[in-house]
Image (cartoon, rainbow, N blue to C red):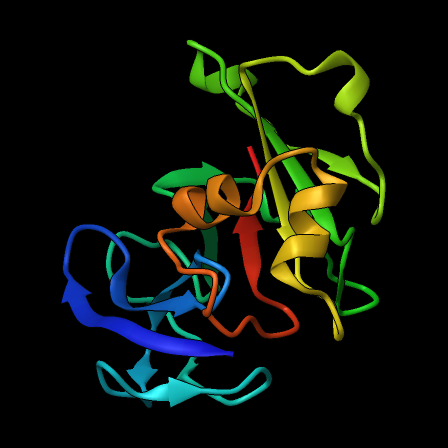
Amino acid sequence: DGKVRIVQTERRGYGKYVVIRHNNGLETIYGHLSKQLVEENQEVKAGEIIGLGGNTGRSTGSHLHFETRFLGIAINPANLFNFQKQDITADTYVFTKYKSAKKNVPSMAKSKTNNNSTEDSDVIRYHKVKQGDTLSQIAGVYGISLSQLCQLNKITTKTIIRAGQILRCS
């Protein structure tokens, strides 16, 4: 689920395209569409049709250009999604900061793992909120204070979190 952020046409690039910002901060881009069926600021649900496949922009054949970005960084969608099962690959993703963009590939961590024993200051950890999670509980799992968790996510201790939401934990 998410909110449509951009509906535009770029003749020399993606052609007709749509950008959706999801509640967890992930952005998905759908390009080379023949028709866009949504408007900017429209709320959309998973599985809802947002456009029709096509061959617009700089394209040599009808196809969908699908791209994922997190905090402005392009991520290989195959690292996040199992397309055959139509599901995500893991509940938690760990992004490691490198100077070279080639090495900036997320490593998957199994849900409810805690690798605090050998913390690396370059590792940024994220947590996908599950039903029943609390801010205090999440902070404890990652070995940080509640105020640190809130500061990292620009929220307050009174903020209501939802299942599926992604929180930064380091």
